[in-house]
Image 1 (tube, rainbow, N blue to C red):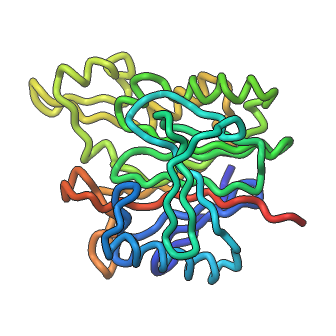
Image 2 (cartoon, one colour):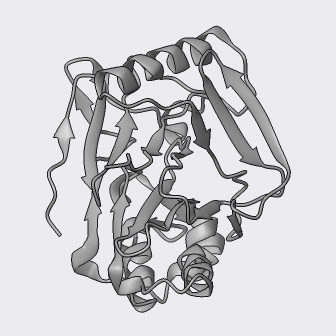
Image 3 (tube, one colour):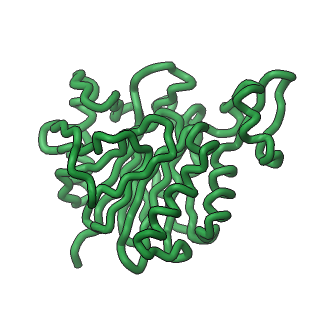
Length: 263
């Protein structure tokens, strides 16, 4: 599935199933941890309101997983307990239980993750409108969060071959390394792992995650990527994205799947 990835001054934007997928750039958007009320985060949310207005989107609620490098998925249609914080007009709703992925049958709900370098994947079922977003660091990939999501989708009767999927920018293989002890979880994916010395390995987490998605019967032709490296990508403003591995900071990007408008 080849869908245009447009690079704007302050963000990347694409679409899956007529819903916008947005990834913010760091020179204007610098989100920090959930509930952080520092000036930088507040200003980032005010700028996000302007972005939505520019895109002719009326967004007041964003749903975000309570990410902690797990493979747990929560159906937010059944969730009764949330942590809630409001930044000007935007309200963030996070399930209280730990989860790195959320799923809903409500096509109008907008979903978001705030990654540093980790992979964020979002998807929509073209038939039912069921949608998801999940966060996958190396621990999430190692514990096969893709399988956890596929199981939750199947519970809702979703045919995985009907899912359109987008993978947002994350750290590339060139800049992501693990020591020998942690790299052992990925050595079975030898095509995507290379040793740079006796103790450290470069891991292509995106390609491993894609192989896991296709093993679960998501269709490769329905997967598109924003193929930018959060660690190294740059433009005239310098580094394009926040990177935890590069900067060791609390600043984060936003990966957003907007809700579907009523026709």
